[in-house]
Amino acid sequence: KVKAVRCEGCGVPVQTESPEQKGYIPEKALEREVILCQRCFRIRHYGDLGAVEQDPEAYLRVLDEIAATDSLVVLVVDLFDFAGSWIPGFSRRIGKNPVLLVANKVDLFPKTANWKRLRDWVSASAREMGVHPVDTLLCSSAKGLKIPDVMQAMEHYREGRDIYIVGTTNVGKSTLINRLLREAGGTQDEMITTSPYPGTTLDTIRIPLEDGKEIIDTPGIVRKDRISEWVDPKELKIVVPNAVLRPKVYQLNDGQTLFFGGLARLDYVQGTRQPFVTYMSNRLYVHRTKLAQADEIWQKHRGELLAPPKDPAAIPPLTKHVITLSGKEKEDIVIAGLGWVACGKEKARVELWVPEGIQVSTRAAII
Ligand code: GDP
Image (cartoon, rainbow, N blue to C red; front, side, top):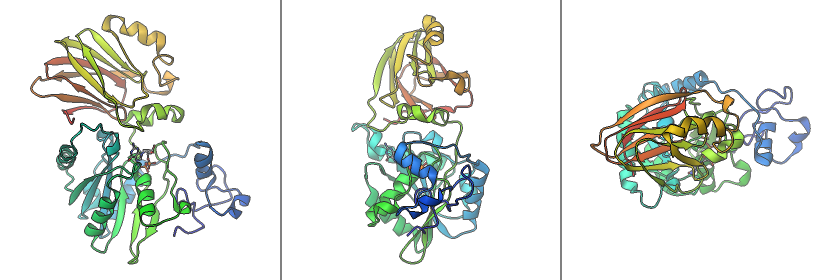
């Protein structure tokens, strides 16, 4: 059981001295049955988030410590935001420890998606990133899909060792741990705080296993090259999908533009008529217009019709990425933290505008 001196939400040791530091709990709140730091209490009851800085360097040091242990590393990635799920220098940092790859949020994929193909794509991409998992599993922590398989694989591959859970923020590590606890017969009090805000789990949480070993949940590294990291917490619900993606099909001629809220913009500059299919949160408004009018509409309606962001000044200015589609295979244009656009099979030139520093990539179509 998580010790009472630690916050039962985020695992941080609680303190009653400094309200602005992490783990703060008002003296009186110590009498409550469930010990939650003020921050977790607020998140749980009001959906509020106090800003606590995350230090990527500190997280990388946690990974370096893993290299010195003999353990199983469970790398959790987000199938929806796959590009944003990778940790810089991951394999080098964790040393010789075996990696079990758990690809979360499979519930977001439409029924038409082929799970076997998805899984093959996940393991192939991992290998490309220099990660050679002992096994790859798809699951949904939120919906409880394939959780027993994940548990079994963890037990099988750990061979009596500790387990580290690692990943970038927001991939669903906390939700997964909660699921595992529930599956193992835990109680409500043991639930860790999960929230749609990036980087909610602050410190490592240790969950004892029967043989004296532990599951160690690490806080996760923030990657600022994902759009979701820049969106105001209040607007994040619009950007981060919570239900099966309903792809939207746009048959575009060149000279047409799609706006993805006020966050990104796709200009179809050159090519023949073909479909562009968006796989993004169903709540995100996609607006189609003529390229010739795009600038004017953007300037006039950004922050209102074209939102989020309500406050465009809060995110970096847009920069242009020129993308050439070869026409040899169907390709996805991926915007980290936002989703992707599945393109047709025609040669094309696309200009994609995203906030500066946001990762853009292309890949062979996954659906
Ligand atoms: P962490 O930062 O990796 O610990 O991520 P959290 O567990 O806090 O989850 C981040 C966000 O992803 C929250 O909004 C969760 O509700 C959501 N989430 C977690 N697991 C799943 C899942 O299996 N499917 C979907 N659709 N959303 C999930």
